[in-house]
Amino acid sequence: MRANVGVRIIVHTPAHIDEPSRDGEIIQVRGPDGAPPYMIRWSDTGHEGLYFPGPDSVIHHQGSVHSG
Image (cartoon, rainbow, N blue to C red; front, side, top):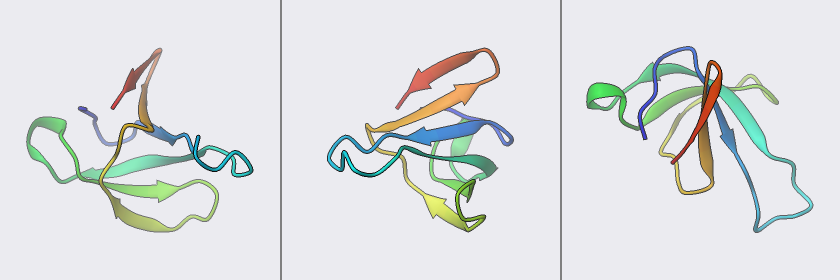
């Protein structure tokens, strides 16, 4: 998974069907060459936190979507 500051990350929660997907903006890339972990500002709470994306995460680049 590779990303840049300003792109959107979407986390799907298939194990919890009663919970909606979550999304946020990547505000800092901590790994080399766009790799995780990422500092995320979550859209639902405004909370900022360090995030290590799993297989349920998708990077939404302008005009395309890339799975992690």
